[in-house]
Amino acid sequence: MQQTSSIASFRQNPQILLLLMAFVMPLTFSVWNALLNNFVIDAASFGGAEIGILQSLREVPGFLAFTAIFLLLVMKEQTLALVSLIVMSIGVAITGWFPFEIGLYCTTVLMSIGFHYFETINQSLTLQWINKEDAAHFMGKQLAVKAFASLFAYASIWLLMEWVGWSYNAMYMLAGGAGLFICLLMWALFPHFKQTSVQHKQLVLRKRYWLYYGLTFFSGARRQIFVVFAAFMMVEKFGYSVGDISLLFMINYVFNLLFAPAIGKWIHKVGERRALIIEYAGLALLFAGYALVENAVIAAGLYVIDHLFFAMAIAMKTYFQKIADPKDIASTSGVSFTINHIAAVVIPALLGIVWLTSPSAVFFIGSGFTLCSLMLAMNIPLIPAPGNEVVRNPLKWANATS
Image 1 (cartoon, rainbow, N blue to C red):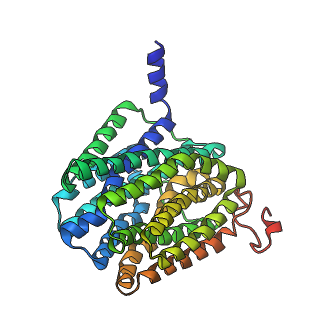
Image 2 (tube, rainbow, N blue to C red):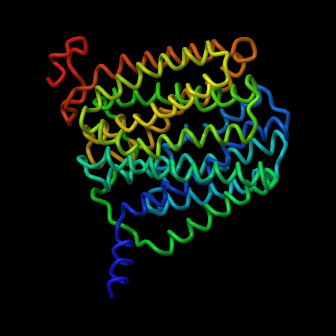
């Protein structure tokens, strides 16, 4: 009886479902991401321009993430989240079967549709199902779960490809197949959980969310430089192998696994304003370091620190949760992902051209984006709330709660 009760309690807990979905996404996506730079160079002879185009195409579904709100007219958010994970898993599984330029563009878009719709809906469900007092800590737990899944994925790549001799195709098939299997289990095991608030089923843009929109825009611009060009630099400039990249990613996620929950608690303690100011000041220096680094070990150290700083982006989500009308969360999550990807659609392709003449300039541009984020973060009140979304005078710290 006790075991039956424990299973029922497990199935009726929406936090468990959120954590399981947080596990599946990086389990499959991390394999795609870790293999990408080496696979496109080895299989399709990609250069900076081609990788820029591929990454821009990858971000198009993110730009169209606002369309998720229209899909909610015909399916529930929980259903859409699982369907999105299934689509992503299929996209990853078939990547190795199309080792040429057009084929890679197409499989990337398919994978990306699932990835971005899931991220949009997952953020919405998290902000709805988790109360404000626990949100930062729970998001830290989610990051730790994602870190564990990514760590497992990268360890599998290192073991199966470096030591057993598996092909790219076999690795992609394993990752996508595992993701698909776990998604079907979640579909069968968990009931549909009720929403705490009935969500608006139309696009919502509100003037009082302008600061969140601005932070989201520059986050997307900055993150693309990290995601696209920092890892690409490791392969092109410093000659990192698939095994080297996997080990580097493993180190990143060990740090996240150990420290992400603590970062979530720290954000709840110090507040979103201070956390984001510290994050952006540190990232501005790190991007400048990327531009100047000539040592492979130092570059790897910058990459690990950079990845840890991004865990502090929890603060941007909890800031929105504190100022938002609960009924706006699903719609605004879709809109915010679109805003995040406005720059992301064009930046990889444009900076891919800049990369051909000056890789350092790409990272100095990243520092510029981060300084813009820093100036915006100074507008966040010490105690965000509806009606207190922005400080009246960001230059006067004494008025931060006014």
